[in-house]
Amino acid sequence: MIRRHMFISGDVQGVGFRYRANYAAKRLGLTGYVRNLYDGRVELEVQGERELISRFLAEIDAGSFVHMEDIEEKDMPLDLDEKAFHVKR
Image (cartoon, rainbow, N blue to C red; front, side):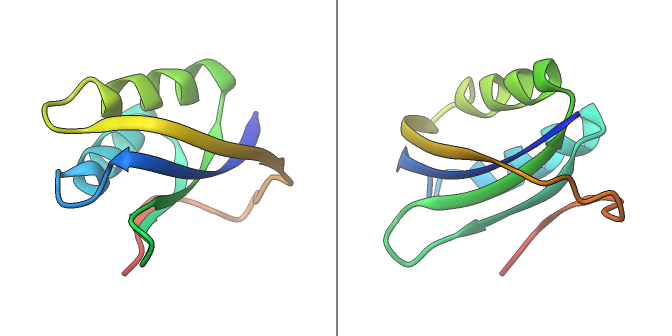
């Protein structure tokens, strides 16, 4: 199990990115959060099995209108108390 923190740029706001991320994470059993940033990027923390996180990102990017151009990412310590994935406002 891993936890990744990401800043994602591209066509990621106003295109259903957060909705798609929330749906995919819950379907795959991942935890974490997603939120829009004022600079046009999306911030994302996701926790789960490495291969499921890869599937999660691929599912988000495969949708209409969403196009991830760049992902800045780093590993983070696990949050063993986290139980769900949610959209932060």
